[in-house]
Length: 172
Image 1 (cartoon, rainbow, N blue to C red):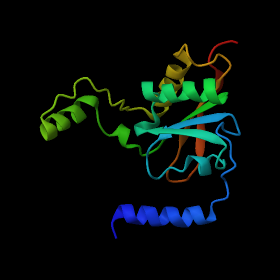
Image 2: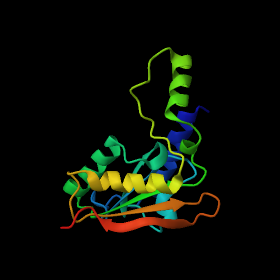
Image 3: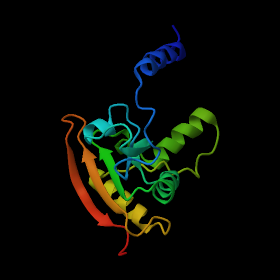
């Protein structure tokens, strides 16, 4: 069976038992979580949340990229979130390379020039969390009263620890 067929079969089983169609689009807890795309992470589960409680925005490293901030702006201005949590994690692949290393690999593999791409790698886990919190706070489009926190999730134990926050974006 092809992977897509397995996914469609899994969806059929999911839909048969699905009873959450009445959830509203705005997150029930007024929360948006920015975290990594790592397949080992289940952000709703490790934060004690349920389906419908929070927006979950995922990308490589859980970085506050322009695209992630775009989603946070929409989440707050159109859907009422008033708290953001940035969650990075131990054993993250983003700790294992530099921009130039990945650019060189891409040049060799594709022949194209990736020099304009910032892959947002990092070498210090806690500092990357603080940097992303600061980047979110610096956006003039994030409401002043939004609280922003930063956490690190340990993929070996399942525990999270606070790195920063909660702090408001700007004094309201």
